[in-house]
Length: 292
Image 1 (tube, rainbow, N blue to C red):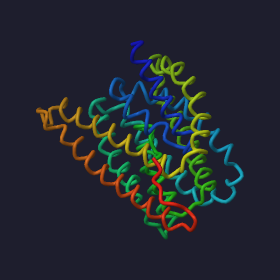
Image 2 (cartoon, rainbow, N blue to C red):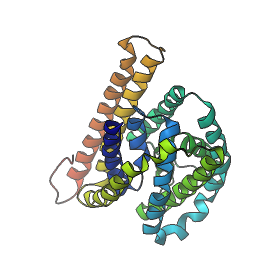
Image 3 (spheres, one colour):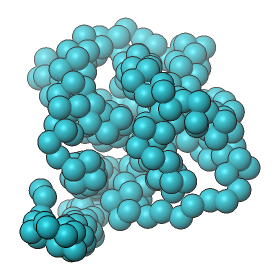
Image 4 (cartoon, rainbow, N blue to C red):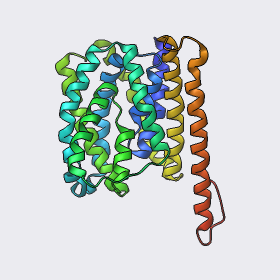
């Protein structure tokens, strides 16, 4: 148990560093790795207790842009309510191994879409917001992850950096607070979950300011892209292992999922850095360079 907790501390330190740099990423890094030795039912309540103050901090730092975005994100917040109720019921009823499997199945395409830089602005923003909010509510209450789909949606709609972080902060504070209430009502806060919190808090206290410093020295898009690659490989490994353990593919052929994701992501990384180098070369007065 102590070895697992040390791993949890290291994982959440990495995740908090990413969150400090980008404004999201704590759960999307922590969950795929921590699910290798913990169940959703134990892990999720502990992460919710951390995410409420963490999301409140992100919103407070970017509160100056809240007035510009709150009307646009209100339909998403309203849509969260039925989604969180449905997701909390699923968390209580579904087998832990199958819940991990569904978690990875949902996460992997979302991460790869974000890594590919997919952006398609939606014109009917309000009506789409309710349906999107319901979907995010289910995903968040089952996995405590919502960063990848939210980042894709907010980038699609062309929010500038501070508006993006403010919108992300208010939505994630709403979803984490609502989910905490839903978990409390469903009796999901148990002693084993509370026992994880002391191992996570120091990592958050160190990682968030560390990430804020790192992002000052690295192009945000480069940092985000590296994190997405790491996340994709972790999710692919977890999915391959579950496909093998659940005997969906009982041989080592299950790990072809991991191999396929590595090949796809390697191509996406090559394309990303090639485009980056081309853009730098076209800037007047700058020599070509590749950040990494």
